[in-house]
Length: 566
Image (cartoon, rainbow, N blue to C red; front, side, top):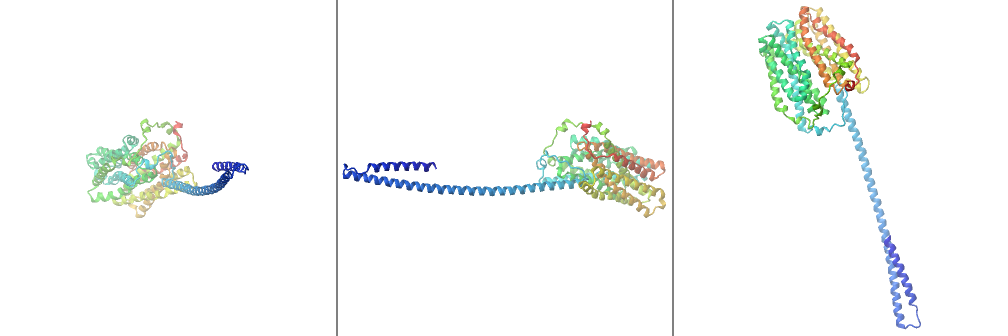
């Protein structure tokens, strides 16, 4: 625009000069003919320059107008392109937002399913945690190694209960060989739990200080050694045999805490529920497998001593595998571990635990659970052989059925409890109370019925129908006992996620004492009552379960801030 204005000014100046030239070129009578010709030529030239300037100005204006229109068209095109890009970006953003919301929803659904499989407990998600890919090896090779380690833990727990159950089966022929009384049999069965209860809390401390992998290795080595030397110790006398079983209990007592440390350090949170279930599932498999294979080993591989030699040797083979493959391999561990808390130590509010009624409800329930479960685990084969007249091999087979029912019902109730809580049909407190009522309430009724049947049926009058009724009632008892998974064993986390493991260690210590009392007093009561199984085994357990049902009615699943209470 400034250029056009400048050219217009120049044109006006040219026109003015031309006008002056015309005025000057007017004929003057006093001027000669040559001068007039020169002036006319100058005037024609000026007129030509004016015309040329006007034509140039017109052309320039046309060019400027064309260029301006082109620039406006280009601007509109650019605006349209930018608008299209914005619309595409908006569409992509909306799609990304939808995908993000979908992913979040899917993650929440998966978390809910994991919670249901774990028994309906809440899952805590810390948004400040780094991505799992930054902390754990999530490559294909890392995943394979991690699940190989979980499988090794599963085998360790299979061996754990194999070496626990072997005495329950072998004690029948051992008692015949050495002439033990029922009290002595109870003493042998309870010696394991002396050591087991002693290392519950220390096992957690050792795993925190030295690492779960090393503590688990030495625990397996210790209990395998105690199992291996049991036949030699039995030949030396009762004190030596009790010492060997005490060693087995010491070794197995550290296993739960050590394995928990290994899983916490080596398994991402998104895989932890599956890993914990898989690893600790070896306990149930070990119980079933021990009751199934121990009798054939005793009958066909050299007597009762063979079961201790074989199971003990398997522990050393496992130890070599663990030592070579996982114990010194840190690639399965977290890349970044928070150690500040470990260095400073953890102040445990013991007084707040003691003053909390829910904590005592958990303690009573855990005590009752172990008195029931380990009492029957230790004495069930002997009961079937003594009171029902069943052979050793058949009694071990029949003993499997109740534990098999536990495994089946456990697989059903975990998603059921989660579904009831997710749809808000029952509160968490109602689920915990209902689970414990079903576990112990049904058990109290069925065990009382078994005691009445045993008292009313002498051994000589036992028929296959009687055996079927007793085993069926035992299967119902153990089937409903599976509700303990959605009751007691979720209660610690409900009460305080921060101190759940510590509270579990405390209540499990009380439970280990109950295991010792159960195995010992059952034998003592058998001696005092002349072999009456109802008053020695079934009625005491039923009474404890009934008391525990009423005690657990005070339970509330509301979280407690024990630090504030303390």
